[in-house]
Image 1 (cartoon, rainbow, N blue to C red):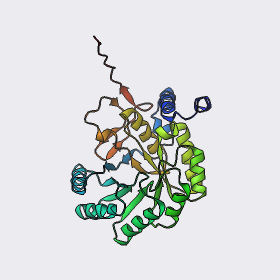
Image 2 (image 1 turned 135 degrees about the vertical axis):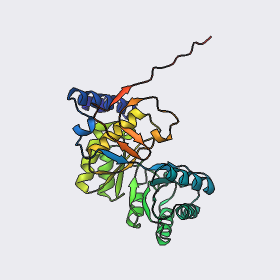
Image 3 (image 1 turned 180 degrees about the vertical axis):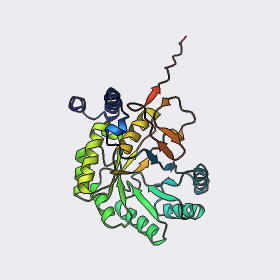
Length: 280
């Protein structure tokens, strides 16, 4: 793993592909599911579902549809309209009622003072926001620090965290309350485990997240989440957003519930064959 992560700068997604394959083979050599090798903390996970930025009425419709599908935790994308985001979240909360957990992802869309005004206003309105993800640009760690210190709502760092060194820096300066781990950012499980250990030292909980990835990559992330107690929140809705699932095996996705099975390694048993078209 040291050779893999030191052979070339960045290229974290390419490294993640190799990293996950190595961990898969290692667990298979021991005849055990990967999550058990990583700690075996839990056998089921509950994921949220992302609601994309759209006109408010569409976001309300999408949120209600998600709840009807069994999702009780929603991650609402905002960050494009400043204080209007408060009205957007307020209307969604009114439509959903108090029982649904709402997370807010600003995707670096606010500046520090604007973020504090928005978050404090949501707190004053009693919107009961579970967390706010990456409220300011990734490079603005002092901005993250400002927002974290001026908000009661937990602040989650996402784009600000790629490496274990990033995790140490932002936790040392209290630039976030929580860390979002994504294997495509960390370069795979090897460095993700280091971030988990760092979070344990600082007493900061972690979320496991994903991008628009296949079931193979999301399944590897699920194994990590199931292995570690420090990962308390799950944002692995990638397979739920796909119309079809071309892969067989691996964790079972049933709406918001991800069930780990006892297949060895990551558990993927069938990978679709590539289809080549003849050019004429």
